[in-house]
Amino acid sequence: MPQPTPKTPSLYTVVGDNLVIVDLNPRSGNRPPGPYRRLFAVPGARAFTAGNLLARIPMGMFSVSAVVMIAGTRDSYALAGAVTATGLAATAVVAPWVARLVDRYGQARIAVPATLLAALGSLSLVLCVHHGAPAWTLFASYAATATTPNLGGMSRARWAHLLKGDDEGLHTAVSFEQAVDELCFMLGPVLAAFLCGVFFPEAGTLTGVLLLVTGMLLFATQRSTEPPVTGRTTARAETPLRAPGMPPLLAACLAMGVMFGAMEVVTIAYADAQGHPAAAGPVLGLQAAGSFVAGLLYGAVRPAGPAADRYP
Image 1: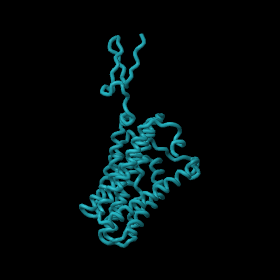
Image 2: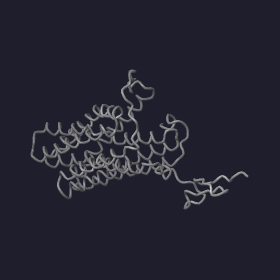
Image 3: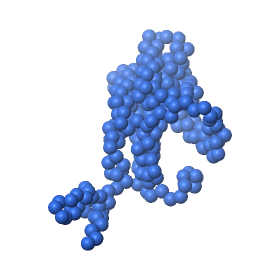
Image 4: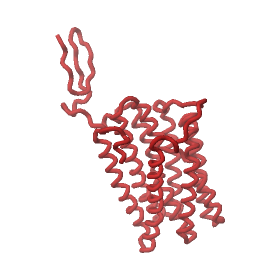
């Protein structure tokens, strides 16, 4: 006789002459699991996400901490903004090189030493600010933090490896990663402003270094979900600038980067001028909170049509 088809995720097993269906989702009744529950049912997903999230929180802390620390000791928001802008420019140059090494030799092998080098740059910045070193040392120290690996990119690469062939699952994963980015920029400024305001100006940067190194080490130990290395290719790769659709995408990202970078410095300076410097963190956090919620909602919606049509 034909056997019944289960309506929920099930495991089939044979007991004697009977086929027994074991419900793997008994608490949800006939309702299938949601997209995020299915996403984190993937083996190893929770472990690497936890380490990656811990390491990404400082991404929203470092620039705010640097601005507060430098402006507070040198009494110049112009200098603080110039130092952080130099770090962003250095990242634009160094990040693709680090990413290429990660693809070629593996995440754990490259990301850990690159993170330690960036952490040394942050510690150097703290020492230079604390001891009143010349201004050029601030620029050099912050530029050294450009070796920080693209944590979000490495996490997305793991999802793409684990969910190969599952377009809906990958849509949810990418949306979740974007929401995590916003979560980090929501929590980071608040935490940085609190630490720098309540304790001492260097507290935000020092805490960020601790979180970054700890999270990266936890992330790197999850070798079972690490995507395979691509190795060195003999064919000459086409530059991304010439890839179809890439120039307008880069232009849009550049415009957004300028806006977000300027908004951090201007918000902190304005809050300080009003006599409420600690308010800058919550204001920046609220901005990121809207994007965080939007990212989660977008990931829960079934994608319609190709990404090229959804982007506009």
